[in-house]
Amino acid sequence: MKVSEITRYLESIAPLSYQESYDNSGLLVGNPNAEVEQVLVSLDVTEAVVQEAVERNCQLIIAHHPLIFGGLKKLTGADYVQRTVMEAIKKDVAIYAVHTNLDNIATGVNDKIGEILGLGQRRILLPKKETLYKLAVFVPRDAAEGVMNAMFQAGAGHIGNYSECSFSVPGKGSFKGGEGSDPYVGEKGSRHYEEEEKVEVIVPRHLKGKVVKAMMDAHPYEEVAYDIYSLENVDPRVGSGMIGLLEEPMYALDFLHHVKEKMGGVVRYTSLVRDEVQKIAWCGGSGSFLLGAAKQAGADVFITSDFKYHQFFDAENDLIIADIGHYENEQYTKELLASILKEKFTNFAVLLAETNTNPINYL
Image (cartoon, rainbow, N blue to C red):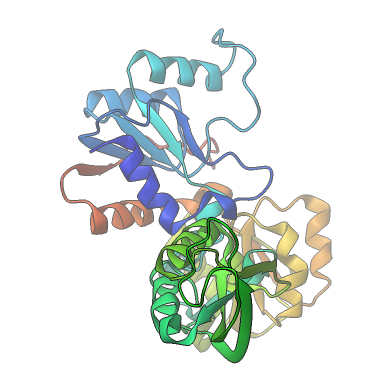
């Protein structure tokens, strides 16, 4: 199994185009054509994690957090990033990161957190914009079904929990073949009118090229007329954070104890402005930017990490902020990645890193 085969599968689930602009997901170190027999899955990559990969005979580390965020201008071993990269290259260990692109899918990091906390009816808290296109293609009626099916198979036509969504409008197209043309219908040099269908489908941004190719391959015309335009619509399956419901309301303090029991660490929280809570919003990693969205959604509690002192005042008694720590709210990402890989691949071993990469200790 090659590195590229594994990373291509991960990117089919968590496309790189879904990562935030500041992020650096993808293959960071290593040859995409290198062979892999065992994979080590970790939350972070440190020198100790690389050493563990070597000791456990793993040729690839798949981590949630990218080792490299900014550009590396030197490799002199001046800091842990440089030393870790140098060690990985020396020991021929590839490093791949799947970060905010895994955060931003409906089955990603936040879904895992919701599962651990027992939260149902989970949905994206802040869906992303500019992730969808509309593709409209003009096709002869006898070929419309085949072209439509080809686009569906390539990933077009999803709206929320529905698939194979399309809209067709009948019409009449005209064309005249010039020198060198080989028209599907009609005579070269004469204007021809053809009963056609205008077929429209939604296309995710990361699948645009694949869907267009499938459409072109299935279309009978020598020259295909089609339009692609970006949409303001949000994709409910892609975005930041999540919101869901407890099966039954819980006393606020009991719920915070439940969170601590499931996630560990320390829970820092604002005033208990609700006696009971049921609607919970959360975000893996640093999610303070979603506080407004959590309020607007009517959440009783917003769970995330890395709130600064003055940001806690922004709760303004509208909800309870619960800061549970960055490592703590993303620690189960290892299990998520392992399950994704094991479901697809059976010809190599997926190992969970045993190295504790949490840089914070508690008294």
